[in-house]
Structure formats: C-alpha cells, structure tokens
Image 1 (cartoon, rainbow, N blue to C red):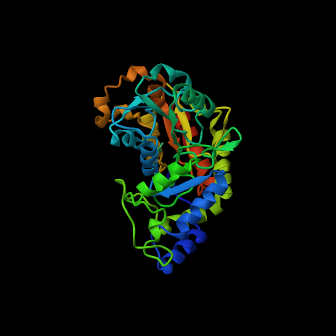
Image 2: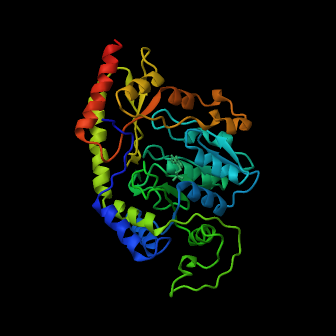
Length: 380
Ligand SMILES: Cc1ncc(COP(=O)(O)O)c(C=O)c1O
C-alpha cells in the first residue's frame, strides 16, 4: 500500500455539506462563502476575510491593494512556491531575495535591512511549514522604512505567532486551502485584513471590478441586476461548493490539528536518534499548526535525492519544499547569484518533507520510521 504525501481528510460532514449545496440551486459565491468568511474571522480573531479561489489570487490582490506598481521592489524569500514570486511579477515589480534561517527556513529578518532601497515598497515573508516569520521585527522594519507587510501564510492557517493567530492583526495575510493544506476547500484561499478599504477593494477586484459589494447577489431577489465596473478586475471568487467544504473542515479543525500533532510527535520520537537526520526545529515564537514534517539529510553516506528514490521504491511518497525559485528557467533573468543564499542552498541540498497529513495512521507512521531506520542501518 502506498503511503501518500498529503491526503485530505474528508468525512461524511464534508460530503453532506457539498451535497446540500449541490441540491440548493446556488453553486457559486453566496451564503456559504459569506458564512465561511465569518467563521474564519471568528476563529482567527480577524476583522475582514475575503475567500478566494486560491492563495495565489489572495497574494495578487494583496499586492495590488498595497499599491505595488511596475518598478517597485518587494523583499521576499527565494525558498517558496512560485506563486509568491509570480504575483510580484504580474505587476511588473521586482522580487528582491533575502536568505532564510537554517532553523526554520523562514526569511532572515536580520538580512533584510541591507536590501532596502528607495524602490522597496513591501516585505513579503513566507511562514514556512507552520513556522511564523519574526513578525515583530518585520513590523518594526516596515515602520522604519514606510513599507507594507504582506504575509504569505499558505502554510500557516491555524498557526500562532507568540499568542495570536497569524492573520489576527494583519493588513495583508494570505492563506491557501489547496488539498495538501491544513484545511482545504479543494482549491481556494483567503485574504484576511484589518483594513475595511482593503477588503472592499479586494472584494471588487475579485469579481471583475464590479463596484457593488454584493455583486454575487445580482441574480437573487436580495440583489440587483444593476451594477457598474470601475476598475479592471479578475475572476478570483470562491464558490459555495468550495466554501461548504471549508466550513466542514473548519468545524473539525481541532481534530485535524491534533492528528497532525500526534504524527509529528511519533516521527520526532522515532527519528531523533538516527544519526544523519536532523529535524527542522522551528523557532521560539511560533506555535505551529504543523503543516509539513521537514527533515535534513546530514549524512555522507546518502544524498537527499537517493533517499527520496529509495522511499519511493518502498511506496512512500516524499516531497521537497522548496526548490529555490531562482533555479527555475523563468527567473534566470533576475540574475540571482546562488552564492548570496548559502542557507537556501544548503536547505535545498539536504531537505525533504515526509508524508504528513491528518489521515495517516500510527501504523503507517511507524512504517515510514522503520523504512528510514533501515535505510540508515544499511548505509553504516
Ligand atoms: C508558500 C506558498 N505560497 C503560495 C502558495 C499558493 O497557494 P494556492 O495553490 O492556494 O494558490 C503555495 C501553494 O502551495 C505555497 O506553498
């Protein structure tokens, strides 16, 4: 039997919710989407939440609402998924990379200041695997240089920075509900903000730039067919089918978190004695909703790529988060020098993510641990 990397946890609750919406006569953005937005606000303690069709859309809208324009510079990490960078490039702005820290693979806040220029307009950290960026230090830098903080929290729904949920007091915080994420809506994401104007603008931009807040109601008795379009928008709205899935997931979030915590603890106990493996430790100010279980292969006897291949032959699917974005052909024109990012290079050489999700059983987790122990035994 294959041990998958990230299977979503779907119960009768999710299936019943989706069936109800399918039978309701209203499939796209509607009451379920608005309901999910309120529930997210209640859970995180945030003021405004806009559910969208992806985190990529949330990042794009956040950058627009932050006023990022062609030629502006946005400081970010190269150790991320391409969405973070692409959304900057959509606006013809320039991503400026800063290395990560080896303990949490999050942007190194102490290396940012030297990269700030007159063109810098924003800092865009990525909370990695549930570990938070150092939000206090980043906020101070933003204040000092009049920059906007935009958080890529694709990995961090339900995680805390110190004692507050990520997104709680953010102006721009973007979550992903992709199927591998902590909770899923199939595909989906959300922009969470404490600024009503940001919410209103992003809402309009998410539906073609239609300037009525309730554009999604235009086919119902409580809405109106009359509307105006006053800006060039996109088609980024979430559907009620997606939202109702998210409502079921959010209702089970404590169970989903607990399961991940149990698997995390088992892995930690089972793997910590193996010489040649280091578990990504995180930082003191994060209270993560654990999204990935990341290890580093620190052995002369086996390389990361060979390790992944052996695991695959044993029907265990691993992954790598991330390939530093400057290695992709598309970004070659940014002329980034690998040597500027030693921690990123080492992380990429050594790291991998083990199967980790809320449906894994204890038996499967032990199976993964056993296979890893055997790999290292046979190499000694
Ligand atoms: C760090 C990071 N940012 C952004 C995204 C994009 O999320 P989505 O697929 O919801 O657009 C991902 C997706 O995996 C991600 O890992």
